[in-house]
Image 1: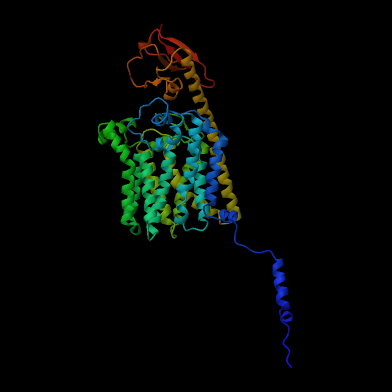
Image 2: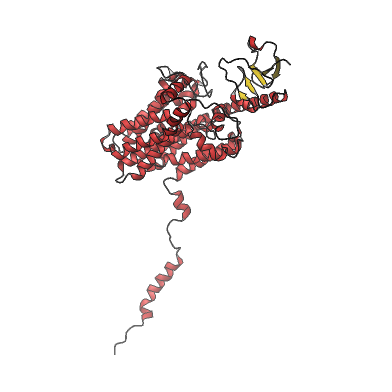
Length: 499
């Protein structure tokens, strides 16, 4: 009689194997933390959060208001309404408005702007993670954000109510969305991003938007695969929508579009061929506004990075010449050149912030070059890390010097404003003279009388200001001087009318 073996005996080895597997740790998919750390956008997010936190550590959110900030904020806050001249646009005012409507105090508004700048640094480079094809594109994009945010001028304006940084964000995003729209079978989302980015730039600085749109339009015509009608519509519609409030205001306040353009040109010294690149080079590490630009070049040895940018960009384009990334880097370079051209060759004065949008775009090919170099060998990687560290340290030191000087100046303006009030000049009042400024007048709660030729100040609640040994004109003969010492700077002298 045939006896079948017991099932237990036959499966004993299988059970032993199952028991052995049960003792091993169970392998699961990557957890949430690991998935986040491994996301292509993670390095970019780290850079954005790092520089947002550094702003708080530096304490720049505690700086008193600057001249242009007062003009922008006075449109929506409790600050006295300042003259909103023809060149200005209200986009940056709208960005600050959610907090500025509630308070005109610097700290809360600057904290809000720091949050916006941190988010903007992340979001503007985000489309480029899908645009670039090179190995290590996450590091390239994060490196570009690092190069931009490491600049002293970017960090100085990170918490400021000023337009240039947000123009830079819009320009970087617009170029990225255009490239995505050219590659995507259904470009509706990318075209919407392109239109919104250009609208933001035009709402903040219409003049810069014109140069940017022109560069993108030329690229659209020059590269056959980019000639999709939806892209052209997005460029034109986005730019027009963003500039519409400025155009409407031209007719309601300035007597028409041509009259506003003429007024803006006059205030800006009229665009004409000039050596603006030399002015920008001299003002590379300050002052914040070089007009007229007669200062001496500061820290020449520290300016090498600026002179190296064209060579680094050319090297990046040469390396990318046979790759899919040549078009993106070439577009970024062309858009940067368009945005910088007016300030380098047509504007007769300088400010370091004018070139922030160009820096933001050029950071992409430069980061590509650095990433490619770092992949060659350990020695080259160490050299790149050392160069980046030196770059960041140099710009941090310049930031410290420049921020301390500005903080001292604005503290002096606040002290002088309080001194004006202590001398009996109370709102409503006016402050004028060659030593006066808009921040100083607002520190006293007074209107600012422009430095342009005006009739002499009259009335009891007025003050005429000079600096150092300056004296008022003959129209102010008999006015009484009151000196306000300012450590490390020329004293302010408050002149009051005779009693």
